[in-house]
Image (cartoon, rainbow, N blue to C red; front, side, top):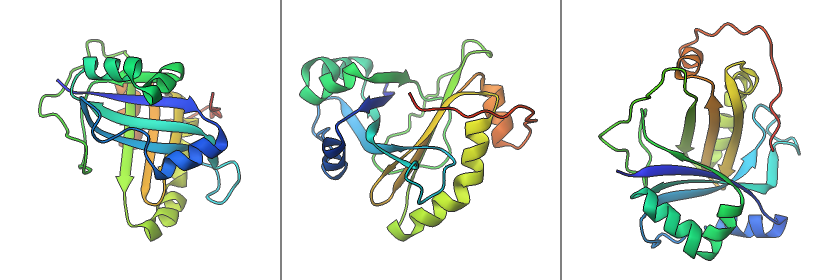
Length: 196
């Protein structure tokens, strides 16, 4: 069964910018189904704020045929070894809304073994370039809600020019995540979550 991986790595500024326009993960990588290379953003900050874009911090969201394919890439590929020095998490597919070209959403869905286990939510949107600023501007209230929610352990956004916008969040439980999505959360204490 295929797996997904989400990687965070710090890169030199110029290298990070260059790789945004020439994805360093080859489409012909053995065992790779699809990947998106993005620059990290601070959730909820103003669209044109210097703090919005974290150009030296890179996020990669990828789908692999199996875990061995990911292991081989991290061990034997030059850029893979760079990723192996950063942080990453391996994900099984549980639920999805919509579709995006490149990724192949599995028909078989995983189930949580424990209802109190943490879960990860990844959103990704590909749109027309002129729609991106409006999307980010109108999405900021939701970004702030996710960032400040007492049920999140970590959250960030990412962008790939000219038209990919994504969010990544780790939640204490699936229930806290779905309550937020359906508007059933009661927030008492807000917090700021800083990028590592």
